[in-house]
Length: 265
Image (cartoon, rainbow, N blue to C red; front, top):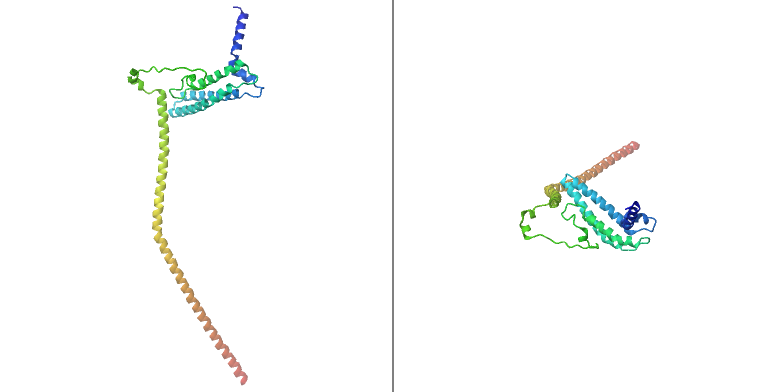
């Protein structure tokens, strides 16, 4: 086979598989009015890459609690991405100006590839690597999965042994349960403290009631004594004023009589 034949075959293969090149489609549609499929596809692909990085981080994490937390975040991300796949599938079937028929027909396969990548992201569960096109409603292919488990397998003790995924799930469950129990214990302690404080306040108020009653009685008595004292003081002042006026009158009368006697002589 000559070099020209090889180049011809390579060029034919490149043209054949250009329809699966998302980057090429993005470049071709950069100056167009905008492709919603590519826009959503890019967002989902970036989220998948972030989830894969987080999954790898969880796999290398030595702290089990931190690994469980990372796996939980990966599962939430996968669930959110799976909800976006039906929308992406609908957009894949819409015609776009400037897009060839072959490229349009290849888009459902691109969606299926994303769905498979999402399912294959390890998240600490036993079902993290099941085939995506076997159970996803938007995939164009269907697979039949046959359970080959026999009654003898159910009697095998190894059949019921925990896997790494089940251990991770149990660890996450125990961790969440411990955190909830800790929070409930703190709430219970706070409520008990408030209850004791309320009881102490009520007891102190009960002790203060007789003192308050005694203070009210003494205040009423002091008010009555002060009123009586003011009354007696007023009477004394009035009597003193009357006596003083009588003395002045006598003195004035004596002076007048003296002057009259002097003039008479």
